Image 1 (cartoon, rainbow, N blue to C red):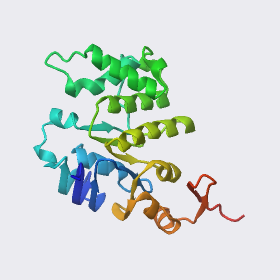
Image 2 (cartoon, rainbow, N blue to C red):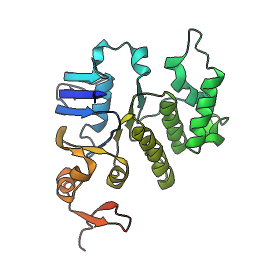
Image 3 (tube, helix red, strand yellow):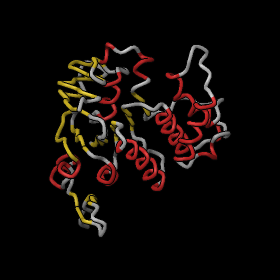
Image 4 (tube, rainbow, N blue to C red):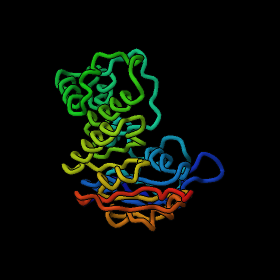
Length: 260
């Protein structure tokens, strides 16, 4: 199956010293990759480098079979959706209007959403449990509510590849699980997705594949059930880990508390 995203020998950074060092990965339809690693190791930089947003790069980035530089921005936005870590200014818009921004790459000359666009936006908001935010002004939204609306905006875009930078930040446990569950449902239907996460247990529960980054280099990558094991996580985070198997069969991970 043709990869949706390919990086080879990717080097990226914001100055003379690179943050990423020779990162290589491939993401295919039906795969949800979780990117895990310590703070400052280059997880967000990887996604931004893939999109050409800021950091200088060397190496190769291919999106849906074409060099990234060969894509016209609007055409790429019809295929690739981006849910950033930092939420841009949203004042002056309602919740529904924010979600409808995801339809922009698909709109015609006048840029006006159709009844079908509005219906799709409302459908996704209902699916995510945020239909009640449709008419709420952005100024009255919490950080978690804005995060859910940004996810809805990305899903409404109907991409082939979805890139998510810390999509569960500011969310309570129920919304963390609910949002990743809806992403995983689309992955199972053929979407490709990459999500920067900090919670190892969420990665174990929802990701098909995992990329472990430490000091800007790939420590390990591959199927989640192979990569997520105590030894690799102890190396990744530099602390002892405990593992357990839940009655459901789910694998659980936790840092070992220091002895007192």
